[in-house]
Image 1 (cartoon, helix red, strand yellow):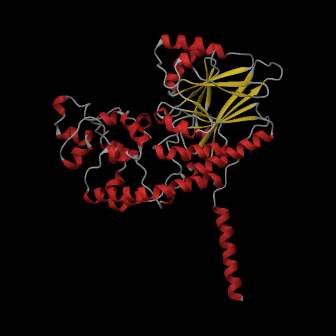
Image 2 (cartoon, one colour; image 1 turned 180 degrees about the vertical axis):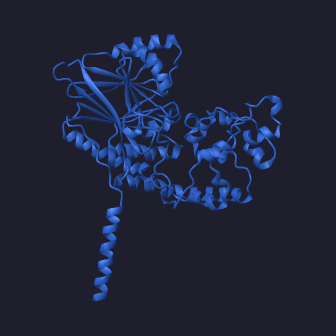
Image 3 (tube, one colour; image 1 turned 90 degrees about the horizontal axis):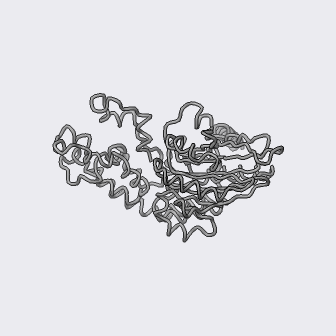
Length: 438
């Protein structure tokens, strides 16, 4: 009996220590005065339902973000706010994951799905699985499609501009003319544009007096106190337009709050901040959807592992389109970067120069030859070096959330192998890394 009691005592102590060491969800700082309207916006999921087992990254799991959205939405509705849950774009990955993502979104209560230009390539399968959720594809000035949310005092009309041509005066003149048709008393006009903050600062004066809120997909490094994740601040007023940054992390949600002025029905106050899913428990229903997807996906992962292991064991060349078969969103983003044009960027007489090709061609460095110039250059394995190491490549076949550890690109050592003082004297990691991040 004493032995059993001793075991139970140790078990109780262990349970207490585990509970005390487990991360607790950060308290959501709710405003004392509930807003009239609250938009909860996610973005940049890129088809990821869960992430690797790296410390600090499990918060990016879809099931934990779902809990954060539900907790915040329920509390704000209890306090009298009108809540709208919106996907801000760049959420798709490979086609097979889209139905699972949209099932989870429908379960959580998303009302609107804004499509980035990259998402629009999956429009057919998105439409098939949207099941009543409002779709907001990129529009030109002549066919703007609105999504309206009616609050107690204000309503917000949201439109999707896609990637607008920043320098095209004719485009902006036509756009403003059509946007004016949505202007009504006690109505705020919000527009999503997949541009960075530099472009947003340039177009804000064009939209003054028409657009109240400009949601942007800004991946540039943040300055202290400005769009700063450390301070959760996500908005800034420029030329009378509130510029609000969409979440860049899969673990964060944009909380966009609007308060009406009780003394002046035409005035309002707006605040945008990021809230985080770290420490949240899994939403069990969303977790079930995630598990269903990975149960189906596991055999494919195992087959991929066998191929990756074969290449890693031989220390041979892994072309980017091999990775792109599954990581389509990341592959398409890579194609838009200068890394994908690294061989073509060389002057004709330099394309056979060994000293240049060592950095400008992964294939040359691994095989000593260049068989293709287009869509080649600085590629997946240049940065994800573990794919050439058999001891780490084998983790590729495991479900992301079950990997015991994972190599994260160490930009400070990987990038400077080629971007050194001799070849890139003006290289700044904080400036250049967002241009290739995915």
